[in-house]
Amino acid sequence: MIKVLLVDDHPVVREGLRGMLDAEPDLVVVGEAGSGEEAVAMATAARPDVILMDLRMPGLDGAGATEKITSLNIGSRVIVLTTYETDADILRAVEAGATGYLLKDASRAELAGAIRAATRGETVLAPSVAGRLMRRMRQPAQQSLSAREIQVLRLVAKGQTNAEIGASLHISETTVKTHLLRVFNKLGVSDRTAAVTTAMSQGIL
Image: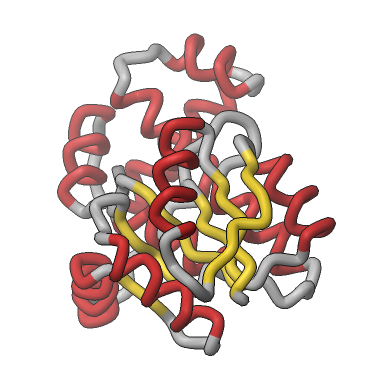
């Protein structure tokens, strides 16, 4: 039997996934976690073969939890299962050590097949995600934004001022300005609006 751990902050999603996987004769759900912190603790205790990991969760997110779990060297394979497929999300997950990246519109057969493939050590990617990675590899290397720079830019996109961003991230307004200047330089723009627009067109946001 292939042991699977479900990680998602929405109980109804976990319930749906459990229902799908329970119908497979060789898959067994050994636990459910509602946060990244719970995922790390449960992975350590249950040592599942495969972890289906949501990406965006409050507190420790999916990429952060994946990085911690892979550093434990317990042999668990992580498949990110999310509704998001921006370049930044995909790269963060892959860099954190995820074996696969699937979207939540995957069918039961696709999901079960991906879990079995991950157990064999294969990389599993949704077709649209594979296409994005291939396009990115063909493009000239660009200066990538750091995780903190992306956080700042996301708050800019929400219309927050530098002072509000500083308060949200517990950093000074001066530090926010420094991050933004680096973002402008890396994206080749000169203002906040252009930074957000460019980041969205490149799939960073």
